[in-house]
Amino acid sequence: MPQPRILVAEDDRYLAALVRQTLEGHGMTVTVAQDGEDALHRAYSDCPDLVILDVSMPVLDGFDVLRTLKADRFHRDTPVLMLTASRCERDVRCAVSNGAADFITKPFRPDQLLKRVKRLLAGAPAATVAAQPRSVGYLNC
Image (tube, rainbow, N blue to C red; front, side, top):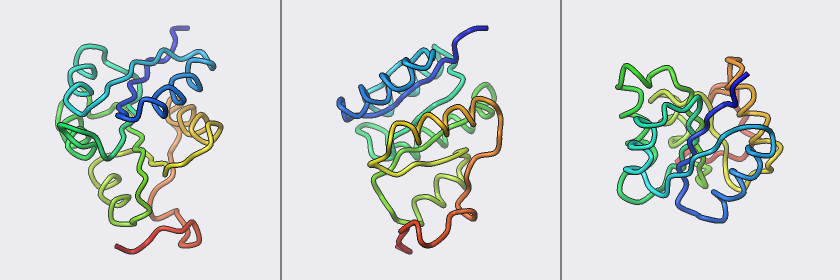
């Protein structure tokens, strides 16, 4: 069975290394992009099985990358997990309405990330904004 290919677009080198280490430690192949433009180039060249996008990145932000991937017939079915430091409900809704399969807020525990990645790779439904209780701490921005 081939290793799942994961594209991680994250401009924070420490966080990118943490995500890479977590996923590679569980048999996944990880490519890291430092900005949104690089993420698009790598998505088109590597055809990942899953994309993990930081919302706030240089050149193109995560929402721009998400919209571009979902508009492309070769990538529209690739699951995208958004990473965000924002606890603003509007950002979460924007991610989901533009095609993100799931989202996770920073900081996060590596085991939480791994669980969501495995669920998305298995094709299982992910968390949605509607399923998130207010007690999680999202702000109505």
